[in-house]
Image (cartoon, rainbow, N blue to C red; front, side):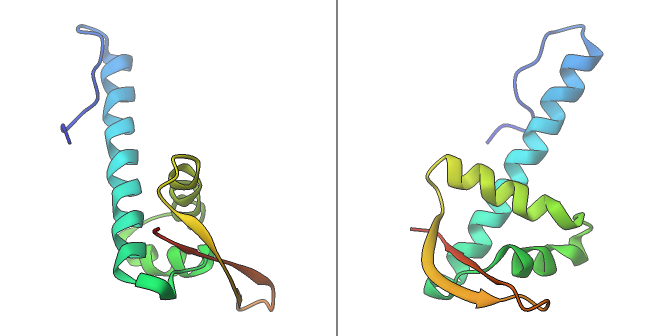
Amino acid sequence: MPETAPFVTGSDTSREAAKNLADLNKKEKAVLDYLESRNFTGATDEELADHFRPFGWAEPTARARRVALWHKGKVRDSGGRRYTRHGLKVAVWVAP
């Protein structure tokens, strides 16, 4: 994967947007790699957030990357459910 996405030469805003896009793609890859490492155990959005928090990710970042991966068909709802620390029953996500 290239370091940055294509951008308009001479445009600082285009260059910055390309840099941010590349970062998002790296984060999507990190989420996908983590889900693949968990095999059929998968992870909930809360578990993803907990895993990536030590890397400085804000609470919704992992979920947003997981949603992007879901839209791209890279992850799926396993059909399994686990409880969050607040007692909510939520989807467990896996890499197909």
